[in-house]
Length: 414
Image 1 (cartoon, one colour):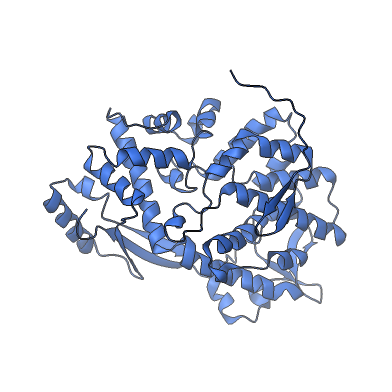
Image 2 (cartoon, rainbow, N blue to C red; image 1 turned 135 degrees about the vertical axis):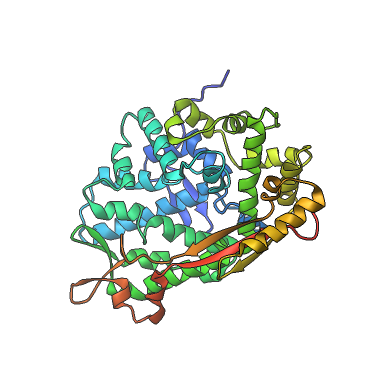
């Protein structure tokens, strides 16, 4: 039986954030959403997945990031109102709620779950399911926030503040991830960027005097992707985690019992697509976090299964596979050579060896010219794409995707 708490809390709390200083909670509804167990779960979801194996300081969470994004949204609303853009109190609150809950659907270690435990269900879809559930508890007061989050609200600039190539999400995570990893190249001036925002024809623009801040933002994004988000060690660790969960699911569905939490056991036993995400599934998903996965791997590293135990041991003790990144596709014969070596040495099947020897590709496209462009408001009052206004010669090049190919394989022995 749970103890019922009297709702007598002071809801005008402040958070002391290492990036921005004090973050204020704008109203009691936002406070109640932050207090909800669905949101508190984000304290147990790492913002950068397995990147802490490369950057030891990268232990910040989705909870940190959500609050930081809301803080920047408060600043954006303040700036736009000062410049004469009409934003009602209802719209203001919806913007705060939309950005606060934009990542609530992330699973353990952020992105790994999307490729292993659930079947092609991304975190945005799960975020919407959480919002729909919360909307029932909050008497339909989240409806406008959900419409803005979906990009279906009539005032386009509000949708762009939550999801675009220059939104409050990116403005926070680049600065925050740079701080916690210690990679100075990603440290953008988000305050300066926001102070240069404006609205023309219902679309978000940046005033021309902020052009250098936009250039720095795009270059910082490029640096952070190659240096941090796509770092080869973090990449191989995430690939191993995906394969741990895939192997655990395969074994469970063959009738082999693995020690795991109730929530994790459910997802190992069932094939979950977006159609299966009912209220019961969502409730179980809300109980999943990084600790479930770490606890399971600590147990599974001693399991009889050769594949599962070795994969878990590699992550727990940071003794990872080797990884090579190339500009050209890996030749099949190179892959097969490593697979044959492994099958001969350990008397395992080709399927089992493929958990340890595999290829893939990574891509980095800093800016997309087609879609939700970053538009600059020139001094003459014209609106132009940032690539046509900037005198930064390589900004145009940043709009082309760069694709690289990787191969992972064991060191001398498992």
